[in-house]
Image (tube, rainbow, N blue to C red):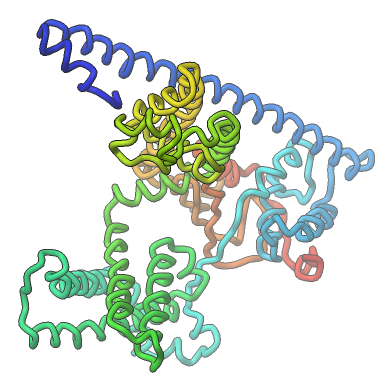
Length: 505
């Protein structure tokens, strides 16, 4: 389709019925055969990936069974305190997240599913799954209130906290961001349209108003950090985005306002442009935009592997191209290759830099071939300066690279479907045997009261959030969260003092 309908036009002009041949060919080849090939390749990839996961799971279960036999020493079970050295050893691995005392208590409580303080083989088999879960405490009070208890009794401070947590405060910030966007468009009207919209006095007024936005954004970030506390603030993706953009804006503003050689109008425009990124934060209020963002994050682990494979493929074909076609395309007027290409579409388009004369040029050309646009121009050019057999080189690269891109597209579709399911999934309440609310599950994370977990009294207080990494399969993530709150008995109690977690972890 890169040269369509150019290839059809001559035949169509001679006989209008010829279009039937090309239409049928495009439908069968482009829309049916290629999609069938993509589906077959993706299915084969999924089978290999599933088999790899099954082999890894089998090895994991085998190693856990061996570890359990070593720990139990002839007994039918292992006591919870005997698992502490395992958590201590895991904390020595820099590639793993640190397990603090609170997470250690909750992880051990999750392993002790029957609440007896004894871990049997079937529970020990779930150790790796439980270690994937991370627990975060809800900051009920602000960081300042924790350090200054008297402040939490102040009515004005409590009113400020309620205001910052309210939906009205977020909408007020959105209004400020919208006004900022409008002022930016008015100031840039001349650059956009070539015509002046405002007078010099109006532009000066906008300039003074423009300097107000940065302090407002700083105040918003500071208030939310004070009221919510840094851990809670940083867990929110929207807050992270606002913090990074605001910090970048402050940095550029300080450079602009400080007396140095960089105090020029271009940096002033850069300040406004960086600050305008806050406009994208408004999109977080749209469910569809949030679905796109979450889909992108969810597909990253699988996509990163495909990107590495694509890079390796490009590097391999670039090296082969340098060996096969190095120097074939050049701008030497005396060379026959230049004469052969001078009047061709390749030469007329001034594509001389697209060659395999070195690795960098070859990598760029391979990337251009991924886009497929004008693919035939490049292929005809190399066939003209080398051999008609060179077309096989480009056909092989196209088949391999296109299938990998189609697999990546399939990953995106799967991730988007799963993300939409998560968005549409309603919250689920899990209650203990006595009817008390144990947890509220929201897809792949849950909010629960930490005093009891899987039938074990933890000695902790307050609400916690249990989360699993976003790279896990959505079905696997939901299974882990649901299994976490499956209880059998509630007759065992543990606390930090009993296990000495703070000392050992």
